[in-house]
Image (tube, rainbow over all chains, first blue to last red; front, side, top):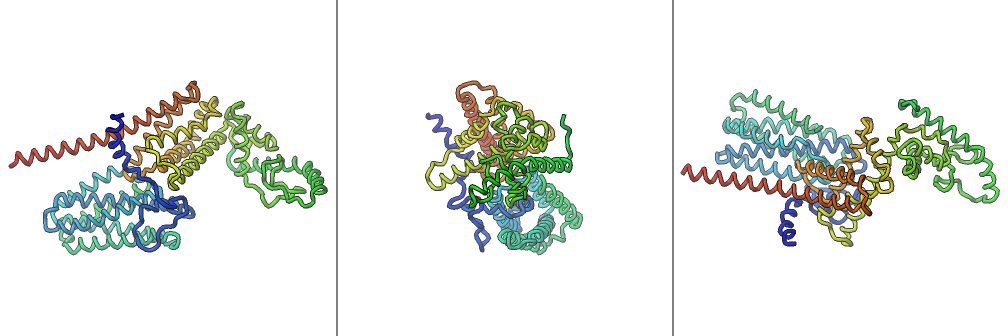
Length: 224
Length: 285
């Protein structure tokens, strides 16, 4: 009995991610997404799943989640190298915004019951390596990486917005969220440019290489 | 004996069967409905109910009634009716033919399906999964209304798997045959789909909210638990399958332990790394 009592806290920690499912009417189709305001309360763990293009939404959420996860790791890598330099605070601020984005997509993933991409452990490492690697090229290198990645992500969000605009009413909340995130990423892109990204060594080569990598990552994460 | 039909041929054959059945039904139907008219002039048109063996797609006089059922619904009804003959005939076309007979259709209706009983097994599995989802949804509602206590995850998983496996008990004799049918190459996509969605459902109702690789490990582990327990169940002869449930309990406990151990390894690893970093800093100073 004592053993069980001793084991119980650790059991609860492992199973800690199993939080009680939604409160109130967190049942299938009975609770619409909160209108206005972009934040999704964890309460509404179930959204209306009828009438939406499930495969499309699944892809969108999976790839966006992977993207924000990767961006999170890229900034972590950059902070590891440049955290104490003059651009440290700026990178940290952008990193915090990405963390927020990731949190929102985590919520969406649970609400729409979408599976994450299998490649997450890979993006974990690859993102950190990219961030740290670009930071080792100097502050401008880090900014160049930011510019390249954020440009890729903004384009990608734009094409998703175009896809969802086929039926703006049905996807109102998701559209609002993605538009806001697209604007945030655009802002990061501009911050990168302001901090002399273009003066980085081999800027155009670096940019093309990183954007190719991003395209490949997006392609894979949508499917796998 | 029956050759594999391509989809358009199958559709043609289906419509031929339906037409033949409606021909067979038309004559007695016309006369009996005539009698019905005389005795119950205010009777509503026969609805699509499984009370009599009268299929609804023929109304009086052989006209198609408004509640014409789709081919899919008809197949659904035939397969459901066929289930009661599975203990006797196994998961075969014979069972389907018997099922069709109880609905008043010709045994040729079994020609709509594969000759190896695939659809019957898939239909049954799909039905069981739906029943499980409804059961779990009910339980969740009860917890939300405060009528029931939220179960700890280990017990929830155990109960869900047990509930699902208990649905096999009426067919347990012939279940090995069903499993072999599900493993046929042309059935694997469908059966894999059914299995994964069932496991996903169980974890969802258990409250899993993981969005990282845990999502995959948890489902993989539960799939392993489910499959092994199913195999144990098939050769279990204890009263009410107690051995199986005890096996299930042990496996779920193992799975939980595995998760704990993984966590412990991770935190130990982190602690070791921190220790080393501290040592390196000390040495460098």
